[in-house]
Image 1 (cartoon, chains in turn red, orange):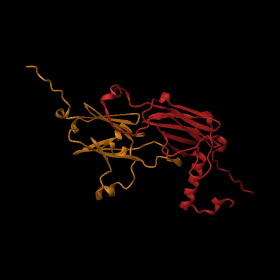
Image 2 (cartoon, chains in turn cyan, yellow):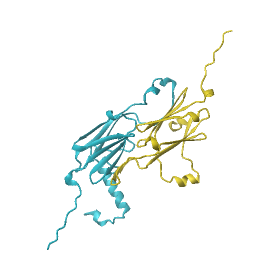
Image 3 (tube, chains in turn red, yellow):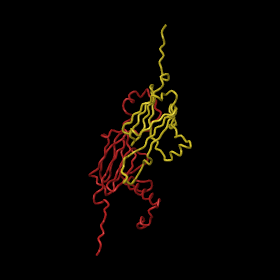
Image 4 (cartoon, one colour):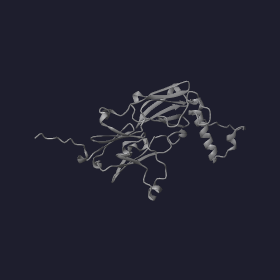
Length: 158
Length: 136
């Protein structure tokens, strides 16, 4: 079908979901579709990722609590943004005398992690900014000037 | 029986299901992953609560019920359109049933980088004691 989006009305829920899934496939690899071979997503991976887009930038939120921000590595290469690091087992003093402890639950992630997001063509990897607050790593990838939406002036013919 | 392994001292349970609560909380809550361990002094609980600020965290004790509840705030701009989301709710909630040997009046809580550390001490009489045998 040519230009399917033109045939959809704005209130079409299914169309919205379809678009969302298309974008999911594009970014992280999907349940059914093809994914970028270097950015294959999987549910339940650590850290969980949310991605949002605005006119100016793509914002990536990585839910990575309890990590020293200095030990998180964020890199961009070949249009892929990679977040990697390691989360240590518990903090400090409790671990010292583990033989006297009984564990009832260990659900929290421990170990090395790496997640990759495929950036869209219009992202500008040269100006990536990352901040860590309350256990959430926020990465802002600005869009290139040329790809930002612009208002086109219509000149009158007369 | 991995899922039941924490029932010895603290029982993981669903939020209360009475009618008022069901109406008040129709939005699904995120269940934060926890580590729970016990030593002679008491129970320590670690919970992952990314995006939670100290001022928003609510820890409530009602009888023997301990509830951790907090909104998740990213501070994102309104103009942001969600593209992909693995976290699809905006608040955390989890409850535990405490056993009678724990001192709920002396719970100590700390939040750092989105990780909550709760320490629940044991009541003095519940702590294991060593009884010295006198030599006569």
